[in-house]
Length: 279
Image 1 (cartoon, one colour):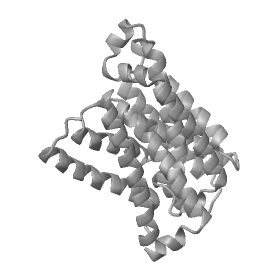
Image 2 (cartoon, one colour):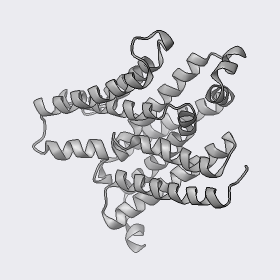
Image 3 (cartoon, rainbow, N blue to C red):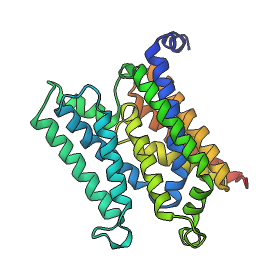
């Protein structure tokens, strides 16, 4: 505990905690919707796209890679959700092709135009999260805060429409809801969250922040609102616990957070099996 208190006096640790809470909160908001709509895999696919965009930014030696990563990831999210039934490549096949292609393309670029003598270490940090929380600075906090506020406002303003689209697209469309627009909005928000989370948990582990809290909450609670609130609390708790453990034990931040998510998911499964809540 004394070690943890000592580390909390450093600005970079506080930055990591703030960013982790914001990312965990935002990812859990849309996680319930993605799981219910069978769109969980889109987070994994877009995270690989973000890795490919990061590779391009590294080759161009940009000090701020956000202007490349964010637009590329958002555009791919739009492409994945556009076209409907008329597109040539359907749903999961399109996500799988884009995911694998972007991952391979990014790694190939980093190998051909290597800007570091420790390529393996750089790639590992990008895929699985930084080994050190020293990488987050004040600008990361401000960017995360601004985008998190936008995500929260959008979710609150369009909560009813997102709820309708999540459970019954056919009925929502018959009621006059623009289903295509709200599906697109969900994909864009997820793309933004993925870009934010790359520095913390890495591009291969991002989808865990979306899926685990939602799946765990569904084991215990039954209403959409209760599951969403529980998912947010679950996700924030695991983020804070994971960072605290990584500081004390010296383990990788991203992997530790995801491990906490997995352990707490098993706990929720046991709770749901023995005393299901009807809320």
